[in-house]
Image (tube, rainbow over all chains, first blue to last red):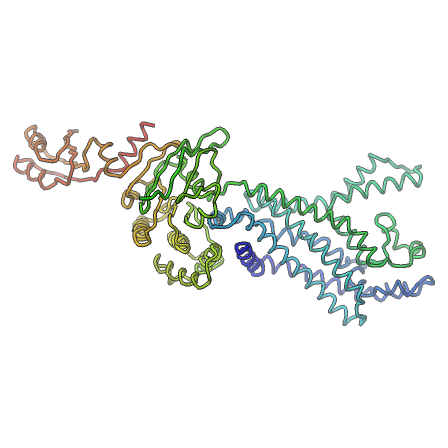
Length: 326
Length: 310
């Protein structure tokens, strides 16, 4: 345990004093600034539009504060979208060279010749990465909250605070998955560049190609054309969604939109139609927090499971590996 | 003397290639053991198995009675290891690198501070203690590595090629440093190398490893006698003219084991440094001496002899 804490504190100090961290923080900070800017531009419109609607209930405009994080502008995406994109990058950046850089610089064989268990090294590195990531996420969310508070003048309700906390928790797990994946590659690949590229490739695959592959699968299983019935179209969309859920990015964005958009009652097709006036009329009432949490539970569990799988593989590989200095 | 390092039929096989083959190694307390062999002989693999950093395919490795495979933490807390390409955290200071080692060994902060200061003193790096390691030369890093193992005051130190890549003067300093530390700290040292003449200066005993097997093992002079037909020293003479009377005369000198003639050179193998006697014999016989050189028995010769046998 002492060994774990020793490595943990050193890694944490390393993380915070590295250029990499500063660059990442600036990147995330920019996301925050842009989110605030977008919110400042659009939040008034978004809120008044709802309240003008004849079907508006006080419930609907209750979550003004959360709109800070989910409002998107014409050109700029919302804070949430930024986070979906950037958290993986942060996770990867903190983990892609965790083991192989120490192997290459010869510090690993010196480290492992000390009386410590091997798992202490990866556990501590993982933990330090997660803590760094958490501090980054929490501070950026607080920053947006602080500036936003001054700007809109509406304090968050208790439920909004709880929802934000749940969002942070899911965000940290999401980041931990990418950190775990990057560390896995850093154990398997000798060269730092290779492991960085491998992690980035996975990220790019899920961000850009997964949508294509999902619709490919859907069209194969349930082909649709102009004459397709509504049921067929729906089935196609559903299969595509199931395929998309293989991607941790999809899992995270679904889970967080449920948490930050309380009006979301279901995921998938309806969620996307929600913006339209029709559904707003149909489902004007937001879900209670408990129900929202229940909806994201499977996503959270899957994200945790994916992280555990990455970690378990890293573990097995690293424990059995022979560490040479040359 | 109790055994500090002991292996019993230690074997390591990678994909059907046997790297270490039924090795039986014994190093007693207080010895400086030279672990010799060409590159790829299995020296590093043996050391890794002894430290529990890799698992043996079969056989047992023990350090001070602790099984390296089953009790790696015990073994690592009493043995220091300097890998061949030793690395430090380059952007941290030398002092912090050592403190980190101390903390990993779960020493108290007070002990760590004391030992860090002492170790840096011993290796002569006190001045550079607060410099980042990236500013260090290769020789300085090697010395820092020695300081690094001193932090945990080990019973045994494994130095893998400690002199590779440093200049001749640095090599000598390094070897003197190792010898004096071994003496003062009563530390057993296992020193692996392929540069024999260096090891020769400080080792009590050597073992020559080739293709994973111990070819020969023992104190240096014994090996020398076995290898060089008894002589300890070799005197090389160059004369203007070599007469058989002179050769006979030299042969009669007490301590001369053999005299060989090749061209205008005479190669004399003898038990001690007999240069004055040989010079006198030449002068007495009216010979004209052009050149005279003496060599201690070279480990190189021993090495070559055993290697060609393999």
